[in-house]
Image (cartoon, rainbow, N blue to C red; front, side):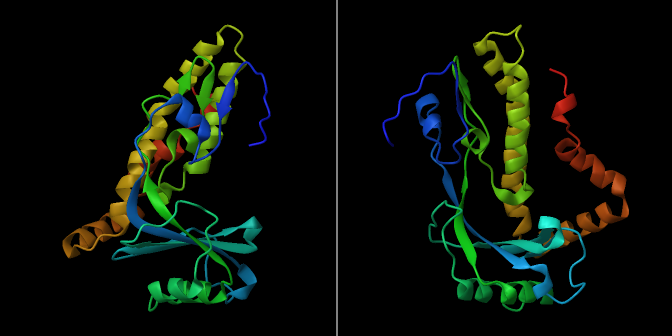
Length: 253
């Protein structure tokens, strides 16, 4: 915005969901509001009853909404994400302040840990969830997109930041390969990363419906599948390996 001009061999657009670089590279389909909003907040762990939450990720699923909580910062804080369905459009921004009164009303009567977390919270944010279809192209001969700029995804697999880190590793490996031209390096980067990030975009979108089921028969089926996954870890791991079993630092080209 200050009219600064720079010269470089390559431009990397790692400028997020509202990417300016993306608009110069690819005509993306406009994001679609999913009819859901996400609330986010942090609570000091010592503000909650001792031992209330184990050191695991916790999820509560209900009709048209769900709540997730887990420890961060070495166990000193609890981060929560609360998602509810809403007809009115909501801005797609992580920095939009939320109203705690509305949030507490939305999850009134839920499990006691949820109530304790929300009662201990003093500040929250709320933003609209938008579905960003996979882009037709991430790169040009001298431009590449990375992270949310290229594959923004719904938060229902919690993989957005992880995918950006993986992108950065693969892009770095390609750019330092002196046997490749710049255009070849960027093309290889896109070809390697696009199938994986598109898969996770699709899974995240599907989970939006899975988590908020209202049909009693489907809810029972979901509950049964979760119990089977708990009893047979091999089945659970088989499903999750394609997500968490990837190590891009050891990935073959």
